[in-house]
Image 1 (cartoon, rainbow, N blue to C red):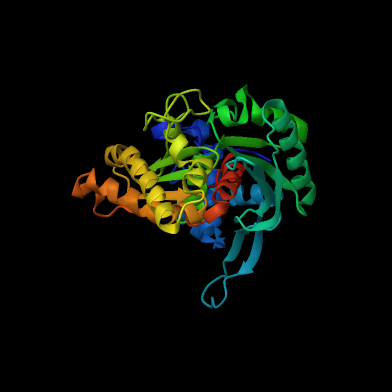
Image 2 (tube, one colour; image 1 turned 60 degrees about the horizontal axis):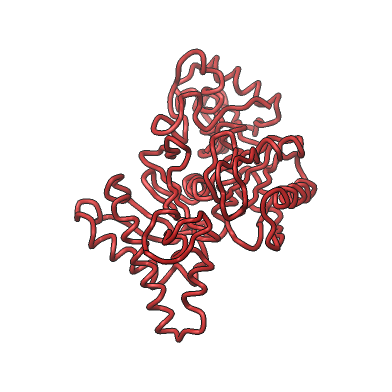
Length: 383
C-alpha cells in the first residue's frame, strides 16, 4: 500500500498542516493528491468523481486516474448513483471502504496497565484489551508490549494497515523514544523494533500529541488547542492554526517536567516537576483518606498549579481551548475550575474571553483514537 506522511512532504513543525487542502509541488504531487482525495472521502463521505474534482481543484482526468488506482488497491469502491437524481447522466458515487481494513492502537499513558484496541478506519472500537504492566520497564516492557500488540492483531477480523502507539516521553518523528523515564526507555527505536517483530507498519508518538490528533480528527477539536494528558505522567499536545507542533527536539508540550514547586522528587531526577503534583498517582496520594471537602481543596490546589503553568502557554499561542484527558473523577470538578480561573486571572481579556477548558470529548479513548490517526495519517494521508 502506498504511503504518505502526516507532513505531506512539506517539512516539520509550523509548516506541517494536519490536513492537505490544496495542490503542491510536482515532486510531491502524486502522494499529496492521493491524500486530498482520501481526505475528502473520509470527512465528507461518498462523492462523485466530478464533485471530487471541484472540491480538490484537481482535473477530472487526474481524479479518474487516482480513483481507479484506489479502487484497485481496495481502499475505495463505487457505490452506485446518488438517490433522487433525475436530470442528465447519473453520477456514480465513490466512497472509502472504511469497513475493509482495521487499525491496532495502544495507549501507554497509565502507569499500571496498557490499553489497546482494534479500530475501524472511522475510529469505531471493535475490540478492547488491557494488560497489567506489573512494574515492568525497559526491555521487559518492550517484550510485553510486543505480545500485547500480537494479541490485538490476531483479534482483528480484517487486514490491519498498521499499528499506532501513544507513549509518555520525548519521541521523535521516526518513533524513537528519546527519553521516557517512567518507562525506563532511553534512545529506544520502539517503532522499528515493533515493526520488525510484527511485520506491519508501526507508528509511535508522544501520548499527549497523540491525544491531540484524536481530538482533532474524531473529537471535533479546534485548530488552536492544547490537550493535557494526565496519567502516570503529565504531557501536552499542541495544535496551532491546524498545525501540530513538534518542537526543535520533538519535545513540544513537555510541561510535565516544568519545575512548579520546591519539593517532590520526579522520575526524571529533578525536584518539583508538575508531574509530582498533577499525575494520577500524585493526585490519588493528595486526596487519600481526606474528607470530601479536603479532597476538593487538594484538587483545587493542583488545578491552580496547572493554571499557573498553562497561562503563559495559552497567552503566547492565543489558544481557543484547553482539553484535559485523564480520570474524570480527579480532573472534572474543582481541579478544572481552579485551573480555568487561574488562567483567566493571569492572562489578558483579549486572550481569555473565549477560552474553554473542558474534558476531552473522547474521554479515556482519546489516546487510542489518536494512535489510530497516527496510522491513518502515515498510511493514507488522512487526519
